Image (cartoon, rainbow, N blue to C red; front, side, top):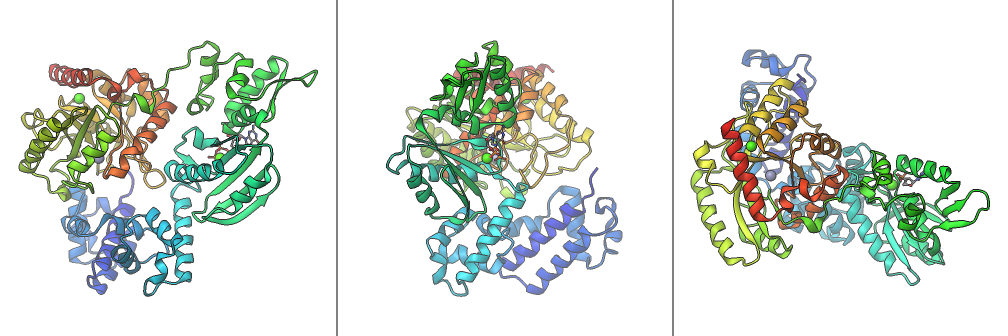
Length: 581
Ligand code: DGT
Ligand code: CA
Ligand code: CA
Ligand code: ZN
């Protein structure tokens, strides 16, 4: 079992920040900060210490020791939870920027309504910080530097898929508008929908490269031009992200796209096959080795076809058996975003979501879903202040909205909390009233492997749990997944008819591609969800789909591609099978 000192230290540090932002006693904030450091650096695992021994840690007094005891026992501290709810989530995100203190974060939130790192970047680029007292160009530069540091450190020098996607789509839109553009797209790991991105690779098809290179260098958000030439220009954005632009002659577009999409391992395989056919594959095309005559280059389909392969979807190009499957013409028919009929895990402002139920439902309907499940948190996450009454009131509203929407069914679900022993928030008779229950782990991440495994297996065995939400609980670049025996969990899910979630929230992507591949072998079904906490999160579904494709999932594997009747049957069947044991 891991030492809990860092976890406890981080919690107390957060509390110190919270006190500072809410204008609390500066002396008290400093006391918590000191205690946080002392505990993080203490020689003994605080998880093993009693109340008296905790007081022996330097800078830890009675009230801090009490909080530590409460945290170790229950997984949370009520005072801290309360302070948290008093603070806009956005300010909490802002203070994670290394160069931005709590006071400035609060000013940004109150004066400019900025509550996320992305909004802050936007505000800086629009020069909206310049009017604020105490902020100057120097502050802006410091903040930008801090954000760059944070985004790189968070993902081990790599950035999250979603952040790279936002930048890439903007760049592609701008370059597509340049005269002479015959094609423009992103390639590399981004086209393969990898969970983190090292750098962005942009390709343009055009006869003349100069106008594109010039437009690229002149884009907003360019902090530095790293290198520029006729074929390739590399820049670094203000977010600290490197972007390479390559301009290809239109007649070698397919070969270039294939080459620069990668992965390297996949390309090694395709080049080997070329060699066996007496061919040579490069970014310019597929050529006869002897005569040098070009046999294919214009489209990826032609290049693959001349190698005896069907076109291979980029999300499969990782050398995980896709070449062999392609040669046998047995590539999976991957699930697509169009196949998704509904979202099974979403929140509203009844708990920690930002938008009211009506707005979430309207936005879901606009996406063309045929069903939508509202799954607010349940009472065991005390900070959400959920009660039976509130839940039942929400159900009434859901039923009314369901009646109003002709094309979309609105269903009432909940996201249960899987407690330390695998128990969930409500007994069976209350759970039976929901259309669908998701259950997820939200705390006690450092239990023993046996305890964590038993916990997840018990949740799957609960008849009313139809989906295990974000099963590993990892946060990419921030927190590793829990150390459970996932083979046992996958087996239990298959046995009990419980689906595993592929959570599309960009810092989760949980299950990961490799876990999906493993789980699929047990015959498990999957749910692809956005876990939206606001209207703008509903499109995270695309990242769930991308991750699912990387795990080779097909429409049949994914319960929310099914018609509602079949989905309901899955829920009923799961309830019946688990009850029979
Ligand atoms: P990243 O940027 O670390 O997230 O990963 P990728 O896959 O985007 O890798 P990157 O940016 O180094 O190169 C993009 C693609 O271009 C890569 O997947 C394969 C191809 N490529 C680039 N350089 C080489 C090379 O030296 N040899 C081979 N075989 N392929 C290369
Ligand atoms: Ca790349
Ligand atoms: Ca179940
Ligand atoms: Zn959730």
